[in-house]
Image (tube, rainbow, N blue to C red):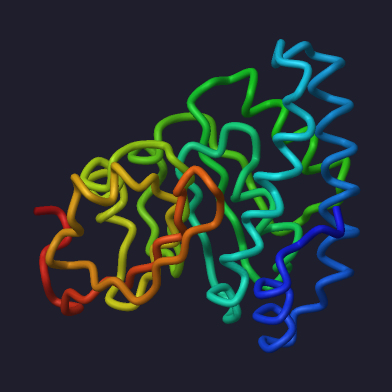
Length: 211
């Protein structure tokens, strides 16, 4: 778990983030996730545990953008990446994990309790079914194309909401951001071309968000 890219280590350190502490917390989380996966037989692929570690580490690229206190809505939390990782590493942020598959949602809740993450809740259902609330951050990893995510989450946005999405290269090429989102960062995080894409909502406070 120590083979973090030097550039990422440096970026995290520049923002005052304790890299070794983050790695230790992720290691603890990975061990618990692995235990529940095997106990509940959620996945059949024997290499999934190593893959989960890799994906969890890629979540670190977003930490410099999660510095202020607020609420984060994670779309399609599934295996806990990136939402559960954010909750673990940024205790000043309240994270809402949304998951439609009941078995996965219950497992997420068990893992959350086992790890001792108190700044997260698990919502069973589609994100658009969540009670209305304005959030500071919206996150997702390869859940759906950007137009779909925007349609689902726009009612939760306010003028300065940040989107932190992990998007594939093809999806970024095909789906340009809506006019209400201004891209502020895009960085490739793995050899498959997946990138952390960060954008800020730019509509006015009085604009109708339900359109």
